[in-house]
Image (cartoon, rainbow, N blue to C red; front, side, top):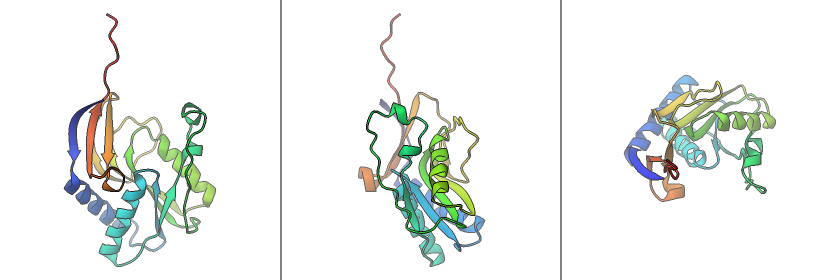
Length: 185
C-alpha cells in the first residue's frame, strides 16, 4: 500500500472527539444512564478519550467497556483457523442503559452489526448509538453512525488508517491506496 493523504492530524482528532462528546451529551440530555463501549482495537482508546472529555465537560464519570466482536463476525471463517479472541470487558449492566458503541472507522457496517449482536448478548439496552471518528461510506448494511468526526468519501481501493498514540505512537488519520497487482496485458 502506498501513502495517499493525511486527512486528520492530532489537533483534528482532538477537535472531532470534543465535538462528538458535546453531541453525545446534548442528544442524551446529560450523562444519566449513559455508557461508552469501545470496539477492539482502536475504538477502545477513542471511547476512553470520549469519556475523559465528557467528564471534563459535565464533571461526571461515564463507564467505559471493551467489546471484542471476533466471534460475532460474519467473515470468521475467512480469518484463519485460529482467530485471536480477546476479552470483552463490560463491567456494568447494559440492560436499560444508553450504550454508545465507539469505533475508529465505519465502512460496510458489518463490524457495527457484530458489535450490536455482542451487546445484545449482554442484556437489553434502552438504546444503542454509534460514534465513529471516520465515516468512509460504502455501506453494505442499513447502518449509520449517530456521531461522526469526519466524513471522507473514498474508493474501495483506498484504506483509511487511524493511528492512535495509545497503539501506534502517533495521532493521525491517513488514506492509503492498495497497490495494483501484476498486469497481464
